[in-house]
Amino acid sequence: MPAQGWLHMESLDFEALRESANLVAVVKVDRIEETGKTKYYKDHVKLREQVLHLMILSALKGEAECVSCRIYREPTGEELIADGIPEDQLRRFMLKLGVDEVLHFYPAQISEGDILLVYLKRDGEHYQPVTGDFTSRSLLRVLPSDRANLYKQSER
Image (cartoon, rainbow, N blue to C red):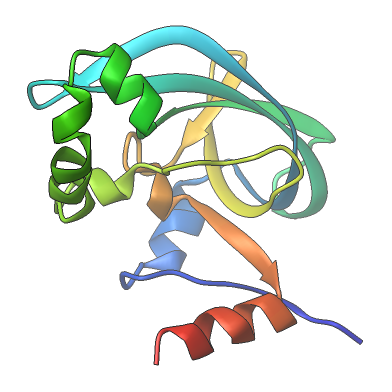
């Protein structure tokens, strides 16, 4: 029987996350909407706002069938070019972003169909990550055990 698990790079206080959350659940990303809103991080980096529509697969705290959650994500290379980063400097700029100590707390990408373990609190009609903008600490990707094992082996 296959198992599921999640990977995380930094140590997290899961008990504090759980206590702060109205909803702790394993969810499937049903749909993603780009809102068109952006937020600047440093000089030229625009974080893009998305609304994730999440279908609850297993609620660990709280009750819901589906919820929506607003988050910001890192820009893609194409978006950085559109934001004014010269194409010949894009690789160097993305490498610089790759080692940014704060930026890695924003998810680089979440796709429709992804399975996540989420820690969310209610904010009006939407939910938001317990950790605010540092969403990678509240939205953890759940991987089938065979993919998680491949990931761990590739780090060696």
